[in-house]
Length: 244
Image 1 (cartoon, helix red, strand yellow):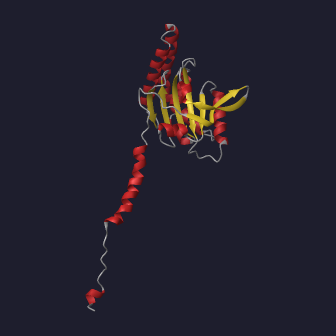
Image 2: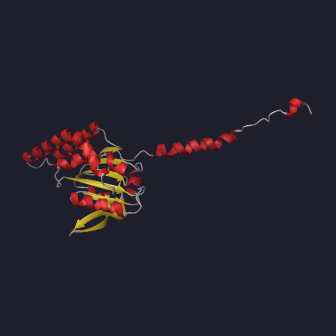
Image 3: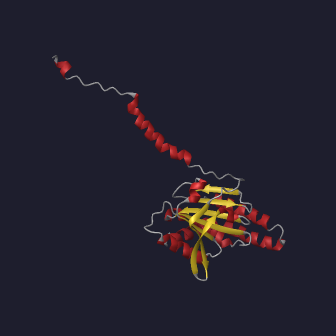
């Protein structure tokens, strides 16, 4: 046998089938990115969703209990909805906004804050940490609506990203007026504050001008002054709580 033929390197024939697994892998990795767009549309009704497992936390007669929750209960008031994963990183994303809204002390007759804790992807070893955080928050803000969505029904129905934070504003008719996933910038915090001013003005249009102007001035001052000053204190306050 000739020497050059003996040491000839084998020829590797690559067919198209050999590249197919790589193509399928890339497609599988990119596919979820296209499915992460939420289905909330500005001006349209909030998609109906219910939470039967756990649900809304109630605090009556010094005792806590849970009731099934449905998004239909949001009607009659305008709401700022904060949906967060039960992770410290998610809870810190919009801490400055939530502290500003709380400090503005919006009238409960027209407005309510709704916080939905999504427990489908949380890192805690048990539900106890989540329940402790919810109970402490309920005691500090008894007028806020707190919902523990253990199976993640709300996030899945609204097609929001997992392990994240989302801010949704709905008017008294249940129509979406604002939606943002992730941390809001200072400009976006001002945008939400301005929107709440408008919704409050619409809600109080049939009441005295004095009441309306007093509350609106209070919110305007807070939205301009607390956006920056609350940022560190709000984040530190949540970070100091290991239960979040």
